[in-house]
Image 1 (cartoon, rainbow, N blue to C red):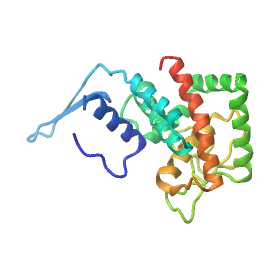
Image 2 (image 1 turned 90 degrees about the vertical axis):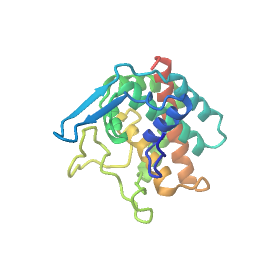
Image 3 (image 1 turned 90 degrees about the horizontal axis):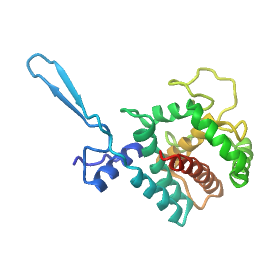
Image 4 (image 1 turned 120 degrees about the horizontal axis):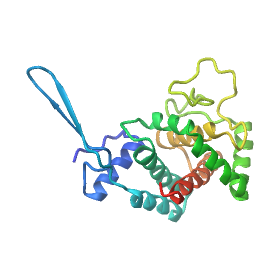
Amino acid sequence: MAELEEDATEGQLADYFAAELSGDFGAWNLGLIEYTCPKCGIVIQLQHDVLPNFVNLIRGWHEKAREEGDYFSRFVFEYLAFIAHLKNHVFLGPLSDRHAIQSLKRDQVRCAGYAQRVKIDGYLRGVLYRLLEELEQRPLHNSSHDFDNPEIDKWWNCSDPQPKVDDPLPKGILRSIDDWENLVEFWYGVRNNLFHGGKDPNVRRDLFLVEHAYKTLRAFVEIELEAGG
């Protein structure tokens, strides 16, 4: 089994851990074997038709998140469950994490399902209102590229495969508690900052963002698992 690279994404981490824990190193993604003729250069790819179901493993990460004592650790395990589910049960294929995130933003069925949960869940609604107020005062910046000079990411207000050019709408905020595409971007932005930008659990702002990312993301993962996804 190949070693995991230091800059692996959470999607790659999920794939790696799943293969390691299951003992089937080729079963986590759709199996793809490539043959190349050294003389003519022709490439032939064979793909397995069966995708193993790792719901139990994803549920394990989801439950592990609840058991952890701090929100930083909770969010890490919840995000692993989230991205593993997204890339292996929802949007099949060799997608990058970013492509999977953009695809989720365009998923109107899951958008409606989350909106319905917000409507009936007063606690979740309160979490979203507090998050909306915090981001209105201080929009979320991306510190994963330059920790000393963070910038607001170009993917806010965007569900397309490519970011919009000269988008006049404010970025780094939720426009409402039903702003699905920016809530998904918030989850991904917190993930980037936490893993690549250096967040401090002793900083109130960092703790607030990670806590609210965990609580809002956990609700989505619960909806997916309740649906048998």
